[in-house]
Structures are given as structure tokens and as C-alpha cells.
Amino acid sequence: MDTTGQEVGRIETRLRQLGAKLDRLLAKAGEAGTEAKADYRQQIGHAKDKHAVVQSKLNAFKAANGEKWDNFKVGVETAWHDFEDAFKTLKQ
Image: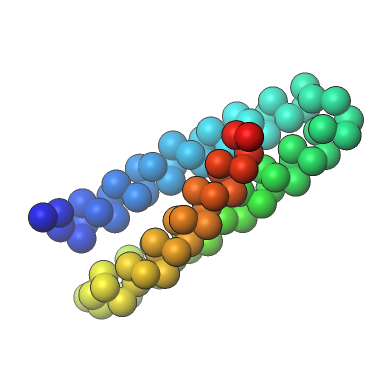
């Protein structure tokens, strides 16, 4: 069984990776046509907002020194799934 620290570490690592990917996608959005560019940037912005929610929930857990992961896990997982859905929409 994983420890809470390992689970949080895995989430943070994946969050950093996907955040970097979002930044690269945003840079590429400038290459798209005008109409496509606006839509694409909007979708990227939506995904970045979801990314920020996951990060803020992880930060809240870290700041809560000593509170159990179980108190935060559901919120983090829900935010993570919302972020993944937004990211998958981008890829389509």
C-alpha cells in the first residue's frame, strides 16, 4: 500500500508534467487559424483553471499539517478527474 506522501508525490509529478504540456499547447495555439486559435485558447484556459484547482487542493492539504489525507482525498480526486476531462477535451 502506498503512503500518503507517495500518493501526493505522484499527483504532483503528473500535475507538473501536464502543466508543462498545457504551456506547450498554448504556445502552439498561436500557429492555428484565427477562429481555431480562439477556441483552442479557451479550451487550454479551461484546462489551466482545472489544473490550478488541483494544485490549490494539494497546497491546502500540505498547509493543514497533520490532518488526514482522507479529509482531502475526495476533493483532490474530484478536481483531478475534472482536470483530466478538460485535458482530454483538448486532445480531441
